[in-house]
Length: 213
Image 1 (cartoon, one colour):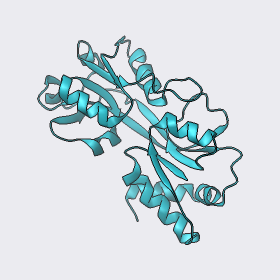
Image 2 (cartoon, rainbow, N blue to C red; image 1 turned 45 degrees about the horizontal axis):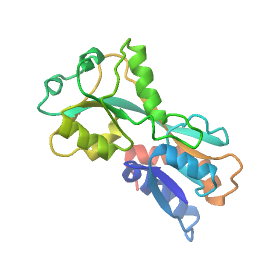
Image 3 (spheres, rainbow, N blue to C red; image 1 turned 90 degrees about the vertical axis):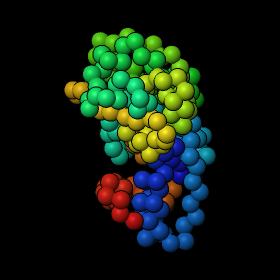
Image 4 (cartoon, rainbow, N blue to C red; image 1 turned 90 degrees about the horizontal axis):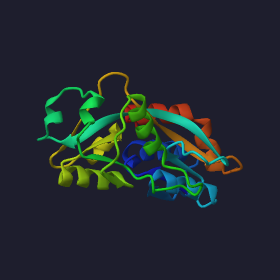
């Protein structure tokens, strides 16, 4: 079984399946979409061979291979003042209703999700001490809260795949914060499907980046 961080299936699933079927046409692949901490727990528990997920802290039995560094952007309603800016200085987030990834969407090791860690670290590095007004454990929930509360959120750009209605996004001024997307797997896993995927990881990244099928 292979897992995908919800929202990434459209980019990485077709490329991964094509690579596997090129060499292993009879392979049976089961796919599961979940939030990153839950994917890490499933891999650790042997219920999943590998997953496209964040580099979750505390998962010492897992190995992570970097696929992409995903930039974070500011997401807000398109009728808010920040939407009129081409780029947003992080200081502009002060005083806004701030929506973040839930620190309670914990992994089995009791650590905060990697995306929440990346968001908090960026704000601290900017000298900002912003406490979330609301927290969510998935991007669909974040979009709904942005719309209903007129709040703002820092999210990876792949969240644009879920944009709907009045929600839009803008890049940040200065050095762009990123969150790693990785292929994670248990170090002791001897799955032939996994070994094949790892042997062609560079090609997988190229296919996903170009949209090649």
